[in-house]
Length: 186
Image 1 (cartoon, helix red, strand yellow):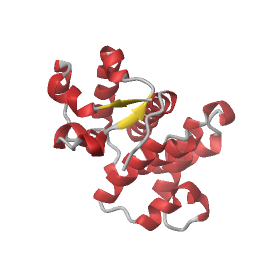
Image 2 (cartoon, one colour):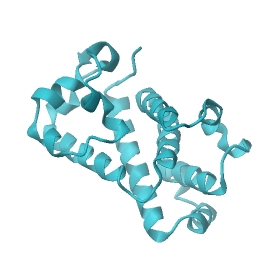
Image 3 (cartoon, one colour):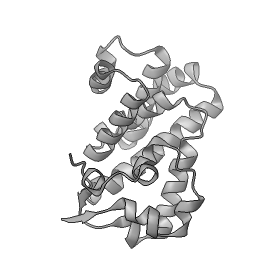
């Protein structure tokens, strides 16, 4: 597997990085100039270099996601849950770290995978996690009516569309990371 340095792309790569709002925690590697030993991922290929236009669109979508009507702490919970379902170690790790930086407790983070059996989550969070699972596992569930009703009881129309966009975006990131074996390293 090839080692990729994402920071180099931000400093020396396509000009589109300069046009993005990189304040999102998801872009901390670019913004903070984290050393290579902390930000290098082992993966099959460097998809940022292989298709910069596609990655420009993905990064733009991620930047938009960070500005939607859904609170950042909830966004991290749904990103963690979708990443768990998709088997994406990189995104699960990244969003768990980001959630902790926002003040999320380890106890709640450990319980995301078993949220149904945990009393740690609000009705709104539970609705978002159920919606995340239904949208992520679309082929299995076709988003059941009861899950939709629960989500509509907790989210406005705009929020539900925004939540679905955030779930769709993390699912896309998961598919890139899993397909090309992007993994976190210590």
